[in-house]
Each structure stands twice: as structure tokens, then as C-alpha cells.
Length: 139
Image (cartoon, rainbow, N blue to C red):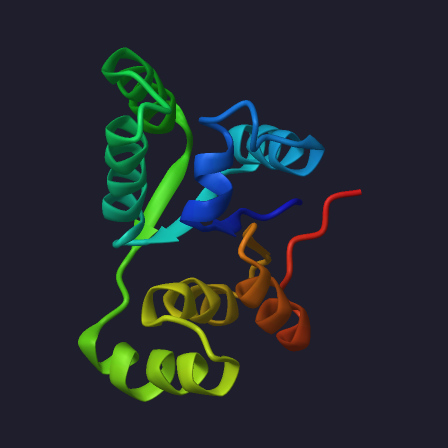
């Protein structure tokens, strides 16, 4: 049985912009449709902020944002908590060791904790995930 994956904001936002989408992001979207994804609770805030910033830059319309928010709401994406204790005992060391933001380290932490692969387009996060054996590679 195939498992869910941990999905980060950078991969999610690729689905919103044709100039950023590629075969990996397309295959990841299809995988999420079929098997679901796990995200830390900050994912929704990161995604909506990314869409708001793109709207300010004229990359997407309000109708476009609403269309993608509707898509995301239909996907089997489940949010899991990253506690304050998790942040201090595990996320912080991961961020420091791999030179990541605490936000990015929370995705890595969730992938490690849940024993799932991490789908990301962020180069630093990909490098850390690869080192730790949790990088999502689509073939």
C-alpha cells in the first residue's frame, strides 16, 4: 500500500503557476490526489501568503486564487501539529544542522517523524531531505 507524502509550500505553489510547473510537480499533484499528503499546520498560512504575494505582483488574479484554494480544499491533505516542544527539541536542531528556516525544518521534521517522503522544490530542503533519506523522487 502506498503512503501519503509530506507536502511543502514550494511544491504546492508550483501547481498554481504554469511557468513553474514541471513533470515532477504534476506527478506529485496526481500522487496527492490518489494517496493524500501530510502537512504541518503552518502550511495553509504559507500557501495563502504565497498566493497573496503573487496577487500583489500581478502573477495571479483573485479568481485564480479562489480556484486554487478550492482545489486544495478538495485534496486529501491532512494537517498535523508541530508542538512548541517539537520546535525547541527537534525542529531547531534540524534547522541549525542543515541551515534551514524553522518553517522548512518543520516539514523535514514531519517527514522524519511520520516516516514519509518529503515533496519540496526548495534546494536547501531537498539537500537536507536527501541526506536524511526522506526526499520525494518521482520516476
